[in-house]
Image 1 (tube, rainbow, N blue to C red):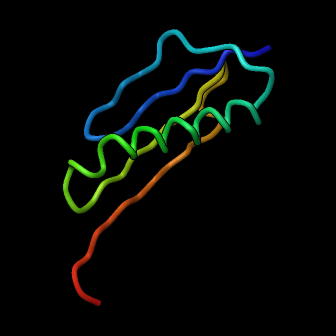
Image 2: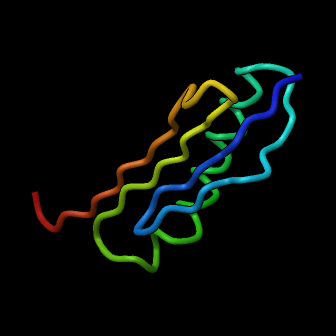
Length: 77
């Protein structure tokens, strides 16, 4: 198993210094997608008409994937 770290990029950066052990990159991808969706669910309704949220996943070599949501509300057409 490898240790993956999930860094959160929103209006601020929260670096994961503990990480979690997961069997492979597919499991890390699922964890990142779940995390970015949960974060979006909590902050998008309360944080204005536009928001970018990223979860960057690192292993011992560096960033291996990024899960990202870009949310924008526009009035009219």
